[in-house]
Length: 179
Image (cartoon, rainbow, N blue to C red; front, side, top):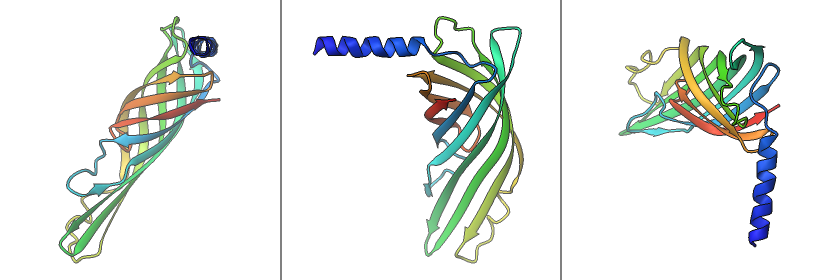
């Protein structure tokens, strides 16, 4: 049993040692579930789901690369009061850019980054009651947000990620795939 565990650990270390840092030409896609949505409160919120893609566009003089990519996320919220039900649906579609810091030369499976996103936020409200007081309280429009995040690759292509900042939620975490 010990021999099997040591063999498995050696394989994982060997695969991780082959990982390359984020650079010009690297593409990574994140699929995440978010916590901390704008639509919180006393009702029932759907988990925030997001998909983002980053493509390394430029290596820069220092330890890092700049990426451009896209983002789409969605969540919803439902609140029932008496006989009426109120529903909000929130979708974000955006373009984002990030700086990937490659200063951790002894940890190639780590990708630490921070950036900004320009997005269009689509907010929809509906109610089965006569109360229209919330109808215009969540408007669609252009948004600009910042984020920081990190990816840890278990293999050359598959890993986990976490991001703080505001897309469709404050904290996103999930799986990442590097092309």
